[in-house]
Amino acid sequence: MYDIIVIGAGIAGSYTAREFARLGHSVAVLEKHPEPGHKTSCTGIISQACLDMLPGSHRVIQREARSATIVSPAGNHIRIERETTQAYILDRAALDRLVAEQAGKIGVDYFFSALATGLQSDDRGVYVKATQGSRPLELSARACVIACGTAPGLIRQVGLGRIREYAYGAQAEVTCKNIDEVEVYSGRQIAPGFFAWLVPTLPGKAKAGLLSKSNPGPAIADFLKYLEGQGKIPPASPDISFGSIPLKPLTKTYANRILVVGDAAGQTKPTTGGGIYFSLICAGIAVRTLDESLKAGDLSTRHLALYQKRWHKILKHELDIDYWAHRFYRGLTDKQSEHIFQVILRHGIHESLLTSPDITFDWHSKVILDAIRHRSLQRSLVKFKLFPPPA
Image 1 (cartoon, rainbow, N blue to C red):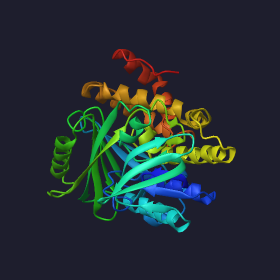
Image 2: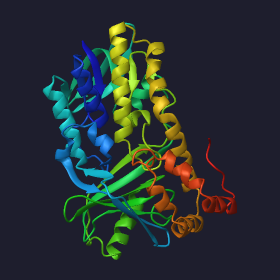
Image 3: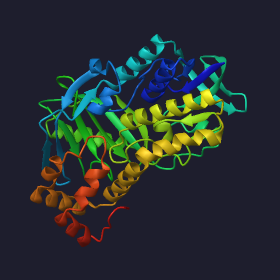
Image 4: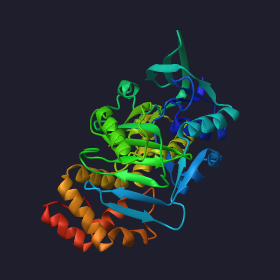
């Protein structure tokens, strides 16, 4: 019997496993794919704070970013820039492999091509059933962490319900010409209710992708054709990866001997779909809470409720404001969006926000609230009969 079983070898799962092993616990990780980072659809943009939580991750940095261009529905541009690096663009699959390798070196047992199909718990432990290739696999542990991304089956099995709202992403690696900074595209013709991106990675390479409320396949095809028409990428038929991103967290992220972390818990930013940094924060809280519970000999639902109290204290307000901003943006027509874009540009709101030391890459609620408090923007909200976010 292991101390901990982690289901999922993505960044949240392997980080959780590594940190548990560092505390002296025996840990097993089940991963349905044959290796970590298998066909990941994440763009892999993280902040300095996130980079600092991932020792050795400088080895998988593809590019540093300190500027970006935002394109309005009508094709107008806002360029934002700071003097120092604001984000790092990583080889996302290589990052997953790196953290899994670090975990393996300190004793974590990995079971690849192992699809978890059943999860139960009682007063003695947790029991996981899986299939590894053609053979059954059964493991037991004192506790379990579900970190298997947006795969809801196991979560429903343990009575934690389901995430009710998702965005769906599509992304392709493309050859690009003269792209030196991140480009973000808005407008219902490109990504209705969301946005698209072109993110430079290695020289002559970039990731082109978008988010959608439903099947993103037709939209990504149209976006690639748009980029071709702009002369940014050559005609091609790249491989496209697809993924789903939770827009709201699970109502409950704990059960008897079980915690849920990362995308599986919905710990992602509704504004951008980014989830690495918040996943690592919550993974750290999960490790701390389970370590205390293991030492106390109490892994009951009541005791593990502390996990959710702790991560809610740090993230709930942030996620609530981010979700409001997402719903607000999603409800705008292109005319409304373009008008607000022009107000921001004309009054230099983006420039005034950039000078604030409180504005960071990871925490968006502050910039959202500061922006809507700007008098000229408030007049636009009144004009379109739009309302402020929750306090």
